[in-house]
Image 1: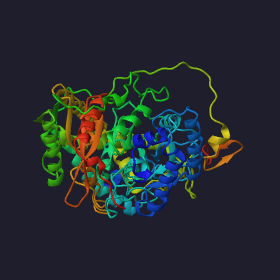
Image 2: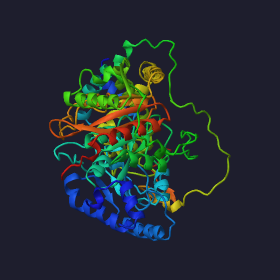
Image 3: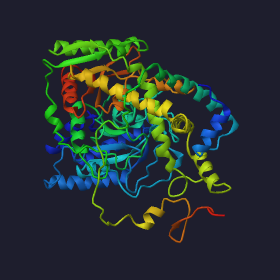
Image 4: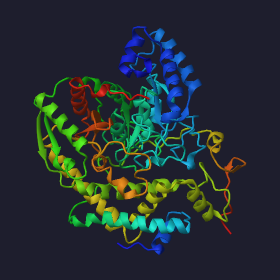
Amino acid sequence: MKVTKETIEHVANLARLNLTEQEKEKLTTEMEDIISYVDKLNELDTSGVSPTAHVIPIKNVFREDEAKASYDREKILANAPSTENGCFKVPKVVE
Amino acid sequence: MELYELTAHELSDLIKDKKASAVEITESLLNRIEETENKVESYLTVCKEEALAKAKEVQARIDKGEAKSPLAGIPMALKDNMCTEGIATTCGSKMLENFIPPYSATVVKKLAEEDAILLGKLNMDEFAMGGSNENSYFKKTKNPWDLERVPGGSSGGSAASVASGQAVFSLGSDTGGSIRQPAAFCGVVGMKPTYGTVSRFGLVAFASSLDQIGPLTKDVTDCALVLNAITGHDKMDSTSADIQYPDYTKALLNDVKGMKIGYPKEYLGKGISEDVKKAVLDAIDTYKSLGAECEEFSLPITEYAIPAYYLIACAEASSNLARYDGIKYGYRAAKYTDLLDLYKQTRSEGFGAEVKRRIMLGTYALSSGYYDAYYKKALQVRTIIKQEFDKAFSKYDFIIGPTTPTTAFKLGEKTANPLEMYLEDIYTVSVNIAGLPGLVVPCGKDSKGLPIGLQLIGKPFDESTLLRAGYTFEQNTEYHKMRPQI
């Protein structure tokens, strides 16, 4: 599989990363190496094999919907990079 | 013998016989950290005052006959991806450099309930991605056997601290070998329990279908003691298994007579160093001489385990790490133009190169047009891997093999080529993919004097058989007594 600079830019945008030109170049080569290597899986015939997302058969773990006290607002906000009036502060979202 | 050199069960006996107090033991460990930390660099945070205060409090309760756990008064340390309320939890990343968790992980609470003493938080590859600790944002931990070599990773600090007497035991996490590989490199015992055995609540997520917490200890008895403390169902982790958990110390029997052991020929094939191969074959001979039946078998899927692993792990990581957006906690870039740019700048500045590489690979594997070819394909291969192990376990009580192809490598030796570093995980990743338990015990040294780790792989939820086999090995060899000179 050929990895192009355009592919890297597209994936970086999906992953919300800004890459420098140098990073893009390096990642293009590295990703191509890695993806050519993982293409090895195509040697295996997996038709009719069902995928395993999870190894232990646990399904639909429910609990009662009960109201409980949560963490203190101050304690949670203490880790936030920017706050105002007890809220997380972010740049303007809606124009 | 200094107190810091002893195992948890030896120290527990001393406490019981009033020959040492929790305070004296904690002081011995803290002094050892002070003396050796400039060389080994295992710790990101040392909680000196808190540890001493806790030791005093625990000793007072031991004196009153209240603190009865075998881990009461035993000083230990945690990989820095387990949340500790009020104590920094960085995950080895600039992204979480200033993160102080508002709550503690379930394992942290469980060890506190056993009255173990928390000495501090241990270095790791950023977000547990790496096999050398060279991906930590903060420092490079050294292998106590040779300070020019890596301790392994990602739980490198967890292994190096136990090997060098800076912690009696530690907890690490293992997504593709991150407990077992550093345990092998540093000559300590490491266990990755069956997926779902130990609660992951409060563990910073890397790849949620693979991650599992486990102990690193000086011997198999300590491993059983720590497992007893940390296993169990947790309603805060919906993937934790709701089963009856055994008393793991009951498995500590010096007897493997009649046990059936399989060793995959693919694990002793190309790529393995002669020293490692010889040590593993010697261990097989030891088991034979003790009355076990050992047989070679084929696990042909082995060569496909690494590509499947990196696709699954990176896909899950790219999704899990989407939460680091600079809004609610963690790093935020100083300069940005709008909300989208805030996300991008924050993530670009906050993550290191390996984390970005894996997010990119995972995002690619999950992106439109590639999902079936990569992610779904990897999950299908996972089914085949699991089936091959199931088939093997219909014949064998457990599987034996090497942990790593080589012993600890030099700092900087493998950083240039990420793919080469990934290939090091050949013997460990299948165990995570199939959700199995894996125990590593020291089984020799190579010509350079570096430790070699034997890997025992078990049936799901059958940690007890591995502990029994590991314990028997220890009782009949001296490798678990090897300690590095620092």
